[in-house]
Image (cartoon, rainbow, N blue to C red):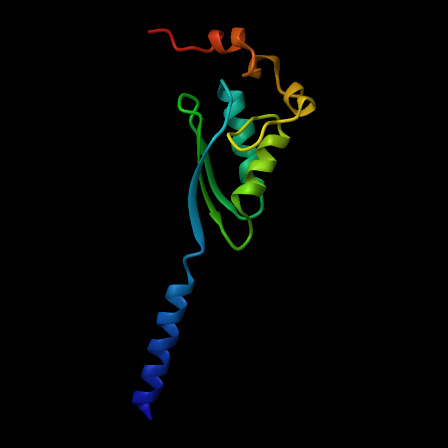
Length: 120
């Protein structure tokens, strides 16, 4: 009887450990130029239900994500980012959303991009 009980417990623990990993990692290219963009992009992503981590790199424009696949997906996260005015490879922000960003964050404007270039 003890052996059966131990076997059942071991099986339950092993099944539970396999079911634990629901987090997915992904990265998106998101347009932006400055630290204000970084804050806005990360905040939009992290406020999406199921997103555990969102880190955007100003230089590479890469947004690295960790999210729970049971609660959200990349399309939903992308839509939240686009809604705050930032383009992705998959979707472009509406003019209304883009125009709502701070003037220093107008990443579509060549002059603004030039102002944010790193001088060597």
